Image (cartoon, rainbow, N blue to C red; front, side, top):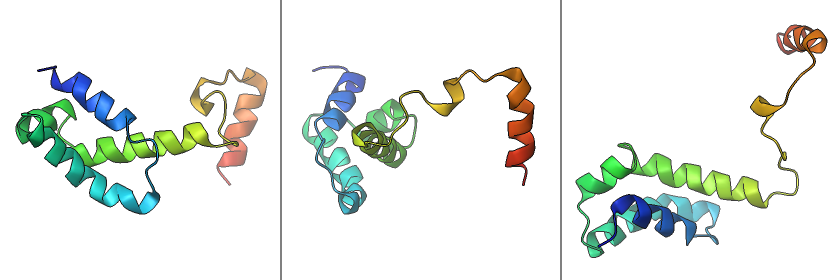
Length: 95
């Protein structure tokens, strides 16, 4: 049996055609799949840092962003800003 972390990553990456309304049932299917593969729910919870639902939602949102035509190439937190304009950005965002 593979370690659950690898299994969990593969299980989530195999769900590429998930509809928005399907995310609700996806966590339940993940739990059932883990049981079917011989993993306990406690091991699944540990592999997902205690929140299976959050892992599923994050994977779904990440997939939607990756397929979006308007998704930024570089996450905003990684964009290097000019220090002179950074202070004006802070003032503008306060309003």
